[in-house]
Image (cartoon, rainbow, N blue to C red; front, top):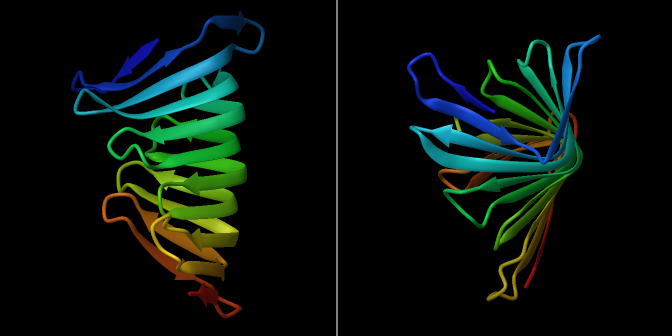
Length: 172
């Protein structure tokens, strides 16, 4: 199933080896879901999950079980979560339950994250644990904060805590 923007560009494509339409409640249930997101008709992100549901007249997508998001522009970035939710009319994708972003140099863990596809920024919500671990360095850097923002384009972090100090630990 492929959805297009008003201008004819591909927005996303969903594939699943098994799907079921529940007529009474107007919901599609899918197993082993794969969603391809497009930007200028090029694949930009892939999201996989064990199961998913298309809700609200196919405007909402709920993913559950081993949700994995892959950044095709930067193959280093991978995000895992227990669940995800996306309203296709918005550019925000919400991930919940043991959200983990990993790439070659960082590891960030949170209970919830919101991925803004338009801005390419991921906001991680309290509690946030960050660990820098470059394999070629002996430097070990850990941060604990209420929230963190990761810019996928610039590869930068911004940490924020409103009530407590940001805690960091640097080991050489």
